[in-house]
Amino acid sequence: MIENKSIGSKVFDVVNVVILILITLVCILPVWYVLCVSLSSREAVSAGKVALWPVGFNLLSYKKILGEGNFFTSFLVSIKRVVLGTGASMVCILLAAYPLSRTKKQFPKRGIFMWIFVFCMLFNGGTVPWYITMKNYGLMDSIWGLVLGMGLQVFNVILAVNFFKNLPVELEEACFIDGGGPWRNLISIYIPLAKPMVATISLFTIVQYWNEFFQGMVLSTKQSSYPLQTYIQQMVVTLDYSSMNVEQIAQAMKLNNQSLDAAKIFIAMIPVLIIYPFLQKYFVSGITLGSVKG
Image (tube, rainbow, N blue to C red; front, side, top):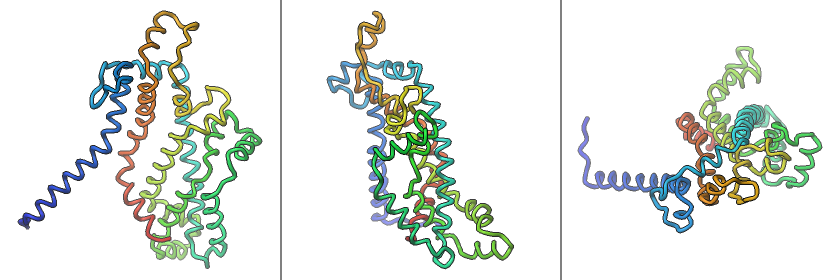
C-alpha cells in the first residue's frame, strides 16, 4: 500500500535528513582534521594553515612512529593485553552478573555483594596502594600486570546483571525441570541468549584496554614492556644533534610534535574502527535490553 505523504511529513523527513547529515559531519570532521594534520608539513601546522586538506603533504610522522624498532613490540604487547584482558574480564563479568541477577530468595546475600560492587566502583584505594599491591604480587613488567591491573569493571557487571534480569524466568525453570543446574543454565541458555550484551561489553572492554596508557607507564620499567598507547604517548620530537647524522637531522627538522600527536591519535583509532563494524549490530540491542531494570 502506497501512502501519500502530507507536506508536513515531507518537511519533517527533509529536516530529519539534514540533522542526521550535520551529526555525521560533526562526528567525521574531527577525525578527518586529525588525519590532515598528521599528513601536513611542520610549517603549515605551526602556521595554522591546515583545515580540510593536508598542506605540504608528507608521511614523516608515520615513518617516525612505524620506523621505530619498539613500535611492533609494543603493538604485540597491546594485542596480547586486549585478547587476554577481554577474555578474563568477560569470564569474571558473567560469573559475577549471573548470581547478582537472581532474586533474594535464590541468593539471600545479593544486596550485600551488590553494595560492595557499587562502593568499589565509586571509591578506590588510590594509585600508591594499587602500585604497592601490584609490585608485591610480582606483576611489574608482566603482561598479566597490564591485564589484571584494570580490575573488574563494575559498570559492565551492572549492565550484564540488568540484561540477565530481562530474560524470561520460564527459561531457568525449564532448565531446572530438565535436571540442569545453575552452571547448565548459565552456559547453555543465558550466555547464548546474551550475545548482544556480550558483544557490547566486549567492545567497551576492548576499547578500555586498548586506550589505557597510564598503567603501562607505572607497571613497566623498560620500553619493551610498554603497550602501544604508552609507547606512542612517550614519543616526542627530540633534536639531539650529537647522535644524528645529516639525513636524520634534516628529517627531524621537518617533524612537528603536533603532527606527530595527530598521527599517534589516528594510528590508535584504527584497530577500534576495524572491530566496531562487526559488533555494531549488537550494540543498540545490548545496551537497551540491559538498561530497563535496576
